[in-house]
Image 1 (tube, chains in turn yellow, orange):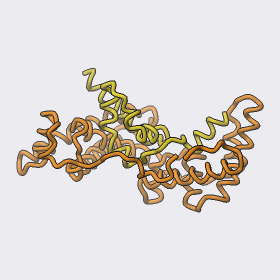
Image 2: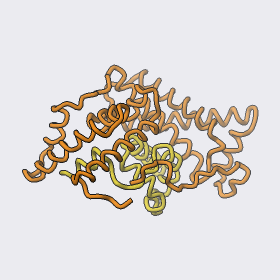
Image 3: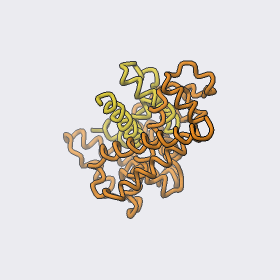
Image 4: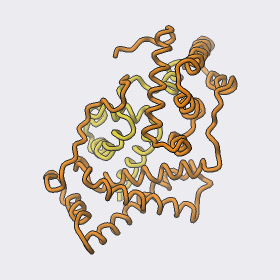
Length: 73
Length: 227
């Protein structure tokens, strides 16, 4: 519970790329993930940002969903 | 945790269009036709706008459960505005396309961003940013279940955090931390009301969190992290 509170209120302790940098890498991050590449390891600072920033994480989910849908159709 | 958001070493160097040798044929065609003149460019802009508009509607549909009050022509207008703004952003930043993903994926990221910001702001348009950091707000955080011992630890942590918010943060940091972290206000909404950007508000929040972590570590409420 204490750990949950710390994460929720103070974010994770990882190095964080910030919104602009995360956005700049979002397309290749999502494509890499869909291709099964270890994107979260290679772009660790982007992955950390997506854990800390709900708005950017939503955009990541949206782009992922869009590409998955296109792969299906 | 890094104290400066921009110190991560990620190479964002854009390559001039002519040097993007690794591009797939479709991406190359997009870049060339958007960089052309006359009817070729106009046709490419039209096709890209259609793709972006479809993507905006798809994303709005995915988020429909979050914004059930937005629909009909209101939603159509938001999607069209998102596609228009994304098209402008894509053409303005075309030289920044690094070719590290397909061109359409890169362009879709812009429209996903635009529609998500517009939906959040539209849903909040009649609201005000909560500024409460009173007893009720802090108590609510402690009342989220858990065993007795864990609850005691959480209450102690929250008391220390509340003191740190008052002692350590600037007025702007406190305003952002209270809105986003304590009251769950969307960061895009805060950015609009502060006449700022998502990235700038996030930076304020990040710096506030850093200060609070350091204070809690100093006072023995959090374990110290290696830096």
